[in-house]
Image (cartoon, rainbow, N blue to C red):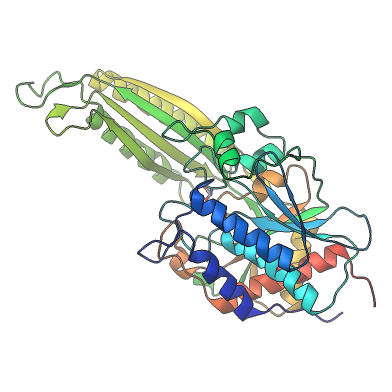
Length: 412
Ligand code: HGY
Ligand code: MN
Ligand code: MN
């Protein structure tokens, strides 16, 4: 069968309409997980899917499964991603994967294609992990990597839990999370890094993803007056935190070119200009494609914390929040993506994802692969995130054809 094609304008319009929900003044999106904005985006997605003839199912973690029926009762071929964003999120991270899936369904309808296996689009709850840590928690429950109760009890900075928010926005589904079996999963996503754009390639055939480790580091010194307290003998938690932040960067620089380390969040107490801070909490993110090197980085961080604590007479606790080992995707699904890209004539290359994705969880329980498209400057988790309509269309064409190849088509 000749390669099927999607509708570029309709895909772009759906992205821009979704971007109006939680739009920020600098052109980005802010729809924190399970916020009112997230609810509005979910409701719009479900309306669109029902308009395209899908049935809808919602599980206990609020994961949404939109299904376009197939002729046989083979396990569905699924796609999807997330609608929740970072606080200064872009208009494409996650959303592209969800709406590319909707575009696949709309295009199958346009072409009057009946598939053997059902085609599904999934919205995974709380992929970003910025309001409720850790990231990819709902797809993690689905894959059996987190317990349901653990996830429902995850709380935000105000102590509001995921379970309470799911009830409040009406997305506490009744279907057990993890019961909805999938035959395979393909997730389309912007690369969020510079490789495709620098290589001038249109499609990333994603073979896996690097590992991620999150920590909460708490530093306790002593509140004291900024004026009369001599410099010698201070137990200044902010200066100790500065030393630890430098260590996180050094540990990554010492393992080029792939190791990365970030301290993206920091809270100071009492946070007063004329009080030496007695307490700081840091949130650390470290990543690498090699699990052994990740273990080394973990040890280096703990050693550095011990030395800083000694030198500055503070107490430092390094608490593990989350460890996601590196993953390798399914070779047959990867081949489906590569063959679709080649058949469609798109330049493509294999790539390992620097970011985590729901596909990195689901690959534990279903054959999985991903499709990347370039984004401008490789920039993401930034309101200026952008991607070209023609690249988004290309990725969606690859998605459509890879899914149809896996699902089988009923010859009319
Ligand atoms: O952290 C990540 O890689 C993803 O954006 N949640
Ligand atoms: Mn994402
Ligand atoms: Mn993200």
